[in-house]
Image 1 (cartoon, rainbow over the protein chains, first blue to last red):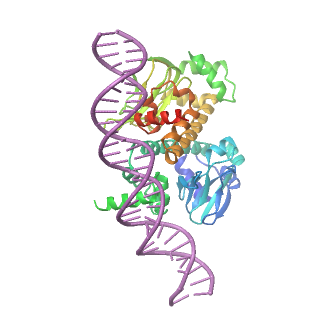
Image 2 (cartoon, each protein chain N blue to C red; image 1 turned 60 degrees about the horizontal axis):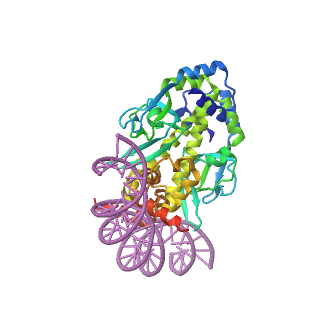
Image 3 (cartoon, each protein chain N blue to C red; image 1 turned 90 degrees about the horizontal axis):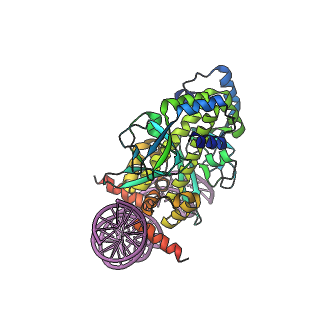
Length: 194
Length: 194
DNA sequence: CGGGCCTTTGACTGGTTTCAACTTCTGTGG
DNA sequence: CCACAGAAGTTGAAACCAGTCAAAGGCCCG
Protein backbone atom coordinates (compact mmCIF):
# COMPACT_ATOMS: atom_id res chain seq x y z
CA UNK A 1 0.00 0.00 0.00
CA UNK A 2 2.88 2.30 0.78
CA UNK A 3 4.03 1.78 -2.81
CA UNK A 4 1.23 4.08 -3.94
CA UNK A 5 2.81 6.80 -1.88
CA UNK A 6 6.32 6.15 -3.19
CA UNK A 7 5.04 6.55 -6.73
CA UNK A 8 3.38 9.76 -5.75
CA UNK A 9 6.50 11.08 -4.06
CA UNK A 10 8.55 10.51 -7.21
CA UNK A 11 6.39 12.92 -9.14
CA UNK A 12 6.87 15.68 -6.65
CA UNK A 13 10.44 15.56 -5.70
CA UNK A 14 13.71 16.16 -7.42
CA UNK A 15 15.52 14.30 -4.65
CA UNK A 16 16.08 10.57 -5.01
CA UNK A 17 14.71 8.47 -2.18
CA UNK A 18 17.15 5.97 -0.70
CA UNK A 19 16.18 2.60 0.71
CA UNK A 20 16.95 3.86 4.19
CA UNK A 21 14.55 6.74 3.64
CA UNK A 22 11.89 4.44 2.29
CA UNK A 23 12.24 2.49 5.46
CA UNK A 24 11.73 5.60 7.53
CA UNK A 25 8.65 6.48 5.53
CA UNK A 26 7.28 2.96 5.78
CA UNK A 27 7.52 3.04 9.52
CA UNK A 28 6.05 6.52 9.87
CA UNK A 29 2.82 5.85 7.98
CA UNK A 30 -0.08 3.95 9.50
CA UNK A 31 -2.13 2.01 6.93
CA UNK A 32 -5.78 2.35 7.76
CA UNK A 33 -9.29 1.79 6.44
CA UNK A 34 -12.39 3.89 6.76
CA UNK A 35 -15.93 2.79 5.96
CA UNK A 36 -18.25 5.09 4.09
CA UNK A 37 -19.50 7.87 6.39
CA UNK A 38 -16.88 7.24 9.04
CA UNK A 39 -14.99 10.24 10.36
CA UNK A 40 -11.32 10.97 9.95
CA UNK A 41 -11.82 14.16 11.95
CA UNK A 42 -14.77 15.62 13.83
CA UNK A 43 -15.32 19.29 14.56
CA UNK A 44 -14.00 20.02 18.04
CA UNK A 45 -11.24 17.43 17.83
CA UNK A 46 -7.67 18.17 17.01
CA UNK A 47 -6.31 17.07 13.68
CA UNK A 48 -3.67 14.56 14.71
CA UNK A 49 -3.10 12.85 11.38
CA UNK A 50 -2.98 13.79 7.77
CA UNK A 51 -4.36 11.15 5.46
CA UNK A 52 -3.03 10.17 2.05
CA UNK A 53 -5.85 8.59 0.08
CA UNK A 54 -4.78 5.32 -1.54
CA UNK A 55 -8.31 4.33 -2.50
CA UNK A 56 -11.72 5.95 -2.12
CA UNK A 57 -12.88 9.53 -1.74
CA UNK A 58 -13.44 11.93 1.12
CA UNK A 59 -14.90 15.29 1.96
CA UNK A 60 -14.07 18.07 4.40
CA UNK A 61 -16.94 20.27 5.48
CA UNK A 62 -18.21 22.82 7.92
CA UNK A 63 -21.60 22.64 9.64
CA UNK A 64 -23.13 26.07 10.26
CA UNK A 65 -25.52 27.21 13.02
CA UNK A 66 -28.48 26.07 11.00
CA UNK A 67 -27.06 22.59 10.59
CA UNK A 68 -26.24 23.07 6.91
CA UNK A 69 -23.10 21.39 5.60
CA UNK A 70 -20.65 23.44 3.52
CA UNK A 71 -18.09 21.44 1.56
CA UNK A 72 -14.65 22.93 1.94
CA UNK A 73 -12.59 20.34 0.13
CA UNK A 74 -13.09 17.11 -1.75
CA UNK A 75 -10.44 14.48 -2.31
CA UNK A 76 -9.84 11.28 -4.25
CA UNK A 77 -6.94 8.84 -4.75
CA UNK A 78 -3.57 10.52 -4.45
CA UNK A 79 -4.85 13.53 -2.50
CA UNK A 80 -4.21 14.53 1.08
CA UNK A 81 -6.90 15.24 3.63
CA UNK A 82 -6.59 17.00 6.97
CA UNK A 83 -7.15 20.40 8.54
CA UNK A 84 -3.95 22.43 8.24
CA UNK A 85 -5.00 25.06 10.74
CA UNK A 86 -5.75 22.56 13.49
CA UNK A 87 -2.64 20.59 12.61
CA UNK A 88 -0.25 23.53 12.60
CA UNK A 89 -1.62 25.42 15.56
CA UNK A 90 -2.58 22.32 17.58
CA UNK A 91 -6.09 23.62 18.17
CA UNK A 92 -9.57 22.07 17.84
CA UNK A 93 -10.80 21.94 14.27
CA UNK A 94 -14.02 23.52 13.07
CA UNK A 95 -14.26 21.02 10.23
CA UNK A 96 -15.47 17.48 9.77
CA UNK A 97 -13.71 15.10 7.47
CA UNK A 98 -15.31 11.80 6.55
CA UNK A 99 -15.17 9.03 3.98
CA UNK A 100 -17.64 9.30 1.14
CA UNK A 101 -16.69 5.88 -0.17
CA UNK A 102 -14.92 3.08 1.66
CA UNK A 103 -11.31 4.22 1.87
CA UNK A 104 -7.80 2.92 2.17
CA UNK A 105 -5.59 5.51 3.79
CA UNK A 106 -2.05 6.11 4.89
CA UNK A 107 -2.09 8.13 8.09
CA UNK A 108 0.84 10.22 9.17
CA UNK A 109 0.88 11.44 12.77
CA UNK A 110 1.96 14.99 13.42
CA UNK A 111 5.17 14.11 15.27
CA UNK A 112 6.24 11.64 12.62
CA UNK A 113 5.64 14.23 9.92
CA UNK A 114 7.78 16.80 11.71
CA UNK A 115 10.63 14.32 11.85
CA UNK A 116 10.30 13.30 8.23
CA UNK A 117 10.47 16.95 7.25
CA UNK A 118 13.92 17.13 8.77
CA UNK A 119 15.23 13.73 7.80
CA UNK A 120 13.86 13.16 4.31
CA UNK A 121 14.51 16.03 1.87
CA UNK A 122 12.13 14.60 -0.69
CA UNK A 123 9.33 14.65 1.87
CA UNK A 124 10.16 18.21 2.78
CA UNK A 125 10.10 19.29 -0.83
CA UNK A 126 6.82 17.54 -1.40
CA UNK A 127 5.26 19.30 1.55
CA UNK A 128 6.37 22.72 0.31
CA UNK A 129 5.05 22.03 -3.15
CA UNK A 130 1.74 20.83 -1.80
CA UNK A 131 1.43 24.00 0.21
CA UNK A 132 2.07 26.04 -2.86
CA UNK A 133 -0.43 24.12 -4.93
CA UNK A 134 -2.95 24.39 -2.21
CA UNK A 135 -2.44 28.11 -2.08
CA UNK A 136 -2.87 28.50 -5.79
CA UNK A 137 -5.94 26.29 -5.88
CA UNK A 138 -7.54 28.24 -3.06
CA UNK A 139 -6.67 31.47 -4.78
CA UNK A 140 -8.37 30.33 -7.97
CA UNK A 141 -11.40 29.09 -6.13
CA UNK A 142 -11.70 32.30 -4.22
CA UNK A 143 -11.39 34.38 -7.36
CA UNK A 144 -14.01 32.21 -8.98
CA UNK A 145 -16.42 32.43 -6.08
CA UNK A 146 -16.06 36.20 -5.87
CA UNK A 147 -16.37 37.04 -9.52
CA UNK A 148 -18.39 34.31 -11.27
CA UNK A 149 -22.02 33.22 -11.29
CA UNK A 150 -23.30 29.71 -10.63
CA UNK A 151 -23.01 28.52 -14.23
CA UNK A 152 -19.46 29.71 -14.72
CA UNK A 153 -18.37 28.30 -11.39
CA UNK A 154 -19.73 24.91 -12.35
CA UNK A 155 -18.07 24.83 -15.76
CA UNK A 156 -14.79 25.93 -14.20
CA UNK A 157 -15.12 23.15 -11.66
CA UNK A 158 -15.66 20.57 -14.39
CA UNK A 159 -12.60 21.89 -16.22
CA UNK A 160 -10.34 21.90 -13.21
CA UNK A 161 -11.45 18.72 -11.49
CA UNK A 162 -12.96 16.29 -13.99
CA UNK A 163 -11.85 13.46 -11.72
CA UNK A 164 -14.20 14.66 -8.98
CA UNK A 165 -17.34 15.16 -11.04
CA UNK A 166 -18.44 11.53 -11.11
CA UNK A 167 -17.30 10.64 -7.66
CA UNK A 168 -19.67 12.80 -5.67
CA UNK A 169 -23.43 13.34 -5.90
CA UNK A 170 -24.68 16.65 -7.15
CA UNK A 171 -25.70 18.12 -3.83
CA UNK A 172 -22.15 17.69 -2.55
CA UNK A 173 -20.69 19.41 -5.58
CA UNK A 174 -23.29 22.15 -5.32
CA UNK A 175 -22.28 22.76 -1.74
CA UNK A 176 -18.62 22.84 -2.77
CA UNK A 177 -19.50 25.52 -5.31
CA UNK A 178 -21.47 27.51 -2.78
CA UNK A 179 -24.84 27.04 -4.48
CA UNK A 180 -27.87 24.87 -3.70
CA UNK A 181 -28.56 21.51 -5.30
CA UNK A 182 -31.67 23.01 -6.88
CA UNK A 183 -29.67 25.73 -8.60
CA UNK A 184 -27.05 23.26 -9.80
CA UNK A 185 -29.78 21.07 -11.26
CA UNK A 186 -31.10 24.06 -13.21
CA UNK A 187 -27.63 25.09 -14.31
CA UNK A 188 -26.97 21.62 -15.72
CA UNK A 189 -30.26 21.60 -17.58
CA UNK A 190 -29.40 24.96 -19.05
CA UNK A 191 -25.98 23.72 -20.18
CA UNK A 192 -27.53 20.61 -21.75
CA UNK A 193 -29.62 22.74 -24.06
CA UNK A 194 -26.50 24.19 -25.64
CA UNK B 1 14.88 50.56 6.06
CA UNK B 2 16.07 47.00 6.10
CA UNK B 3 15.85 47.16 9.90
CA UNK B 4 12.06 46.94 9.60
CA UNK B 5 12.53 43.59 7.92
CA UNK B 6 14.99 42.30 10.54
CA UNK B 7 12.48 43.07 13.26
CA UNK B 8 9.84 41.24 11.31
CA UNK B 9 12.07 38.24 10.75
CA UNK B 10 12.71 37.91 14.47
CA UNK B 11 9.03 37.33 15.12
CA UNK B 12 8.82 34.52 12.65
CA UNK B 13 11.90 32.54 13.13
CA UNK B 14 13.32 30.38 15.85
CA UNK B 15 16.75 30.59 14.24
CA UNK B 16 19.11 33.39 15.28
CA UNK B 17 20.29 35.60 12.44
CA UNK B 18 24.05 36.15 12.33
CA UNK B 19 25.73 39.31 11.11
CA UNK B 20 26.92 37.47 8.04
CA UNK B 21 23.36 36.50 7.26
CA UNK B 22 22.13 40.02 7.83
CA UNK B 23 24.69 41.09 5.31
CA UNK B 24 23.38 38.58 2.78
CA UNK B 25 19.87 39.81 3.35
CA UNK B 26 20.87 43.42 3.09
CA UNK B 27 22.45 42.83 -0.28
CA UNK B 28 19.57 40.76 -1.60
CA UNK B 29 16.84 43.31 -1.00
CA UNK B 30 16.30 46.31 -3.22
CA UNK B 31 14.87 49.32 -1.39
CA UNK B 32 12.28 50.98 -3.54
CA UNK B 33 9.50 53.54 -3.57
CA UNK B 34 6.17 53.51 -5.30
CA UNK B 35 3.84 56.45 -5.75
CA UNK B 36 0.13 56.06 -5.19
CA UNK B 37 -1.46 54.24 -8.14
CA UNK B 38 1.87 53.00 -9.53
CA UNK B 39 2.09 49.33 -10.42
CA UNK B 40 4.26 46.75 -8.76
CA UNK B 41 2.90 44.18 -11.21
CA UNK B 42 0.63 44.40 -14.24
CA UNK B 43 -1.53 41.62 -15.61
CA UNK B 44 0.38 39.89 -18.39
CA UNK B 45 3.77 40.50 -16.82
CA UNK B 46 5.68 37.99 -14.83
CA UNK B 47 6.03 38.51 -11.11
CA UNK B 48 9.75 39.00 -10.75
CA UNK B 49 9.85 40.45 -7.26
CA UNK B 50 8.06 40.01 -4.01
CA UNK B 51 7.62 43.21 -2.06
CA UNK B 52 7.82 43.64 1.69
CA UNK B 53 5.85 46.73 2.67
CA UNK B 54 7.83 49.00 4.97
CA UNK B 55 5.41 51.89 4.69
CA UNK B 56 2.13 52.40 2.83
CA UNK B 57 -0.58 50.08 1.60
CA UNK B 58 -1.21 48.09 -1.58
CA UNK B 59 -3.83 46.05 -3.36
CA UNK B 60 -3.81 43.02 -5.63
CA UNK B 61 -6.74 42.69 -7.99
CA UNK B 62 -8.15 41.03 -11.05
CA UNK B 63 -9.90 42.88 -13.88
CA UNK B 64 -12.70 40.85 -15.46
CA UNK B 65 -14.04 40.92 -19.05
CA UNK B 66 -16.37 43.76 -18.15
CA UNK B 67 -13.52 45.86 -16.79
CA UNK B 68 -14.62 45.42 -13.17
CA UNK B 69 -11.87 45.18 -10.56
CA UNK B 70 -11.99 42.36 -8.02
CA UNK B 71 -9.74 42.79 -5.00
CA UNK B 72 -7.86 39.61 -4.25
CA UNK B 73 -5.60 40.78 -1.46
CA UNK B 74 -4.91 43.94 0.50
CA UNK B 75 -1.71 44.69 2.37
CA UNK B 76 -0.23 47.21 4.79
CA UNK B 77 3.07 47.66 6.66
CA UNK B 78 4.76 44.34 7.42
CA UNK B 79 2.89 42.38 4.75
CA UNK B 80 4.20 40.80 1.57
CA UNK B 81 2.78 41.45 -1.87
CA UNK B 82 3.29 39.46 -5.05
CA UNK B 83 1.61 36.79 -7.14
CA UNK B 84 2.75 33.39 -5.94
CA UNK B 85 1.46 31.54 -8.97
CA UNK B 86 3.34 33.70 -11.45
CA UNK B 87 6.40 33.68 -9.22
CA UNK B 88 6.52 29.93 -8.67
CA UNK B 89 5.59 28.81 -12.17
CA UNK B 90 7.37 31.65 -13.97
CA UNK B 91 4.28 32.49 -16.01
CA UNK B 92 2.45 35.74 -16.80
CA UNK B 93 0.27 36.94 -13.98
CA UNK B 94 -3.46 37.56 -14.29
CA UNK B 95 -3.34 40.08 -11.45
CA UNK B 96 -2.45 43.71 -11.03
CA UNK B 97 -0.72 44.94 -7.91
CA UNK B 98 -0.45 48.65 -7.24
CA UNK B 99 0.18 51.13 -4.46
CA UNK B 100 -2.89 52.59 -2.81
CA UNK B 101 -0.78 55.03 -0.81
CA UNK B 102 2.77 56.14 -1.45
CA UNK B 103 4.89 53.16 -0.46
CA UNK B 104 8.35 52.25 0.75
CA UNK B 105 9.17 48.72 -0.24
CA UNK B 106 11.89 46.13 -0.01
CA UNK B 107 11.95 44.14 -3.22
CA UNK B 108 13.39 40.67 -3.40
CA UNK B 109 14.13 39.25 -6.87
CA UNK B 110 13.22 35.64 -7.52
CA UNK B 111 16.78 34.40 -7.90
CA UNK B 112 17.94 36.12 -4.75
CA UNK B 113 15.03 34.63 -2.84
CA UNK B 114 15.87 31.13 -4.01
CA UNK B 115 19.40 31.56 -2.75
CA UNK B 116 18.36 32.97 0.58
CA UNK B 117 16.08 29.99 1.08
CA UNK B 118 19.11 27.75 0.92
CA UNK B 119 21.59 29.93 2.77
CA UNK B 120 19.57 31.53 5.54
CA UNK B 121 17.54 29.06 7.63
CA UNK B 122 15.58 31.85 9.29
CA UNK B 123 14.46 33.09 5.89
CA UNK B 124 13.46 29.60 4.89
CA UNK B 125 11.45 29.13 8.03
CA UNK B 126 9.76 32.48 7.55
CA UNK B 127 8.74 31.56 4.03
CA UNK B 128 7.21 28.29 5.12
CA UNK B 129 5.30 29.95 7.91
CA UNK B 130 4.02 32.63 5.58
CA UNK B 131 2.79 29.97 3.22
CA UNK B 132 0.98 28.29 6.03
CA UNK B 133 -0.60 31.51 7.23
CA UNK B 134 -1.58 32.35 3.73
CA UNK B 135 -3.20 28.98 3.37
CA UNK B 136 -5.15 29.34 6.54
CA UNK B 137 -6.24 32.88 5.74
CA UNK B 138 -7.41 31.81 2.29
CA UNK B 139 -9.21 28.87 3.80
CA UNK B 140 -11.07 31.10 6.22
CA UNK B 141 -11.93 33.60 3.56
CA UNK B 142 -13.19 30.90 1.26
CA UNK B 143 -15.28 29.36 4.01
CA UNK B 144 -16.66 32.79 4.78
CA UNK B 145 -17.49 33.59 1.18
CA UNK B 146 -19.22 30.26 0.67
CA UNK B 147 -21.28 30.12 3.82
CA UNK B 148 -21.97 33.69 4.95
CA UNK B 149 -24.05 36.60 3.68
CA UNK B 150 -22.81 40.14 3.08
CA UNK B 151 -23.31 41.34 6.64
CA UNK B 152 -21.54 38.45 8.29
CA UNK B 153 -18.66 38.64 5.83
CA UNK B 154 -18.16 42.29 6.68
CA UNK B 155 -18.21 41.78 10.43
CA UNK B 156 -15.77 38.89 10.09
CA UNK B 157 -13.52 41.10 8.01
CA UNK B 158 -13.55 43.80 10.68
CA UNK B 159 -12.71 41.19 13.32
CA UNK B 160 -9.89 39.63 11.38
CA UNK B 161 -8.29 42.69 9.83
CA UNK B 162 -9.03 45.79 11.91
CA UNK B 163 -5.79 47.27 10.61
CA UNK B 164 -7.15 47.31 7.07
CA UNK B 165 -10.53 48.86 7.72
CA UNK B 166 -9.40 52.48 7.86
CA UNK B 167 -6.72 52.23 5.22
CA UNK B 168 -8.90 51.58 2.20
CA UNK B 169 -12.09 53.24 0.92
CA UNK B 170 -15.31 51.35 1.16
CA UNK B 171 -15.58 50.38 -2.47
CA UNK B 172 -12.23 48.61 -2.24
CA UNK B 173 -13.25 46.70 0.86
CA UNK B 174 -16.61 45.88 -0.71
CA UNK B 175 -14.82 44.42 -3.71
CA UNK B 176 -12.54 42.42 -1.41
CA UNK B 177 -15.64 40.96 0.24
CA UNK B 178 -17.23 40.17 -3.10
CA UNK B 179 -20.07 42.65 -2.75
CA UNK B 180 -20.77 46.08 -4.27
CA UNK B 181 -20.11 49.40 -2.61
CA UNK B 182 -23.85 50.03 -2.55
CA UNK B 183 -24.52 46.85 -0.63
CA UNK B 184 -21.70 47.53 1.81
CA UNK B 185 -23.08 50.97 2.46
CA UNK B 186 -26.45 49.44 3.29
CA UNK B 187 -24.89 46.74 5.45
CA UNK B 188 -23.05 49.36 7.51
CA UNK B 189 -26.19 51.40 8.00
CA UNK B 190 -27.99 48.30 9.17
CA UNK B 191 -25.21 47.48 11.65
CA UNK B 192 -25.28 51.06 12.98
CA UNK B 193 -28.91 50.68 13.99
CA UNK B 194 -28.07 47.86 16.38
C1' DC C 1 -14.60 77.91 -6.64
C1' DG C 2 -14.50 73.61 -9.31
C1' DG C 3 -13.43 68.83 -10.13
C1' DG C 4 -12.40 64.22 -8.45
C1' DC C 5 -13.29 60.81 -5.59
C1' DC C 6 -16.17 58.63 -2.43
C1' DT C 7 -20.52 57.48 -0.12
C1' DT C 8 -25.43 57.24 0.33
C1' DT C 9 -30.01 56.38 -1.21
C1' DG C 10 -34.12 54.92 -3.96
C1' DA C 11 -36.33 52.23 -7.53
C1' DC C 12 -35.96 48.53 -10.28
C1' DT C 13 -34.13 44.04 -11.84
C1' DG C 14 -32.46 39.54 -11.71
C1' DG C 15 -30.10 35.57 -10.07
C1' DT C 16 -30.46 32.35 -6.27
C1' DT C 17 -32.67 30.40 -2.43
C1' DT C 18 -36.39 28.33 -0.23
C1' DC C 19 -39.94 25.13 0.15
C1' DA C 20 -42.64 21.53 -1.18
C1' DA C 21 -44.10 18.02 -4.18
C1' DC C 22 -42.97 14.38 -7.12
C1' DT C 23 -39.79 10.96 -9.44
C1' DT C 24 -36.07 7.84 -9.81
C1' DC C 25 -32.80 4.84 -8.04
C1' DT C 26 -30.66 1.80 -4.78
C1' DG C 27 -29.82 -1.18 -1.07
C1' DT C 28 -31.89 -3.90 2.63
C1' DG C 29 -34.72 -6.99 5.08
C1' DG C 30 -38.80 -9.71 5.18
C1' DC D 1 -38.27 -11.46 -5.20
C1' DC D 2 -40.91 -7.79 -3.69
C1' DA D 3 -41.74 -3.94 -0.44
C1' DC D 4 -40.14 -0.17 1.51
C1' DA D 5 -37.20 3.44 3.30
C1' DG D 6 -33.59 6.53 2.37
C1' DA D 7 -30.84 9.17 -0.68
C1' DA D 8 -30.64 11.86 -4.77
C1' DG D 9 -32.35 14.65 -8.51
C1' DT D 10 -35.98 17.66 -10.82
C1' DT D 11 -39.24 21.22 -11.11
C1' DG D 12 -42.42 25.18 -10.19
C1' DA D 13 -43.91 29.23 -7.45
C1' DA D 14 -42.92 32.68 -4.28
C1' DA D 15 -39.65 35.29 -1.57
C1' DC D 16 -35.36 37.51 -0.93
C1' DC D 17 -30.85 39.18 -1.18
C1' DA D 18 -27.74 41.59 -3.72
C1' DG D 19 -26.67 43.94 -8.14
C1' DT D 20 -27.50 47.76 -11.29
C1' DC D 21 -28.29 52.33 -12.47
C1' DA D 22 -28.82 57.00 -11.70
C1' DA D 23 -29.03 61.01 -8.90
C1' DA D 24 -27.51 63.76 -5.11
C1' DG D 25 -24.53 65.18 -1.49
C1' DG D 26 -20.05 65.36 1.25
C1' DC D 27 -15.26 66.09 1.36
C1' DC D 28 -10.69 67.22 0.07
C1' DC D 29 -7.36 69.65 -2.61
C1' DG D 30 -5.51 72.32 -6.24
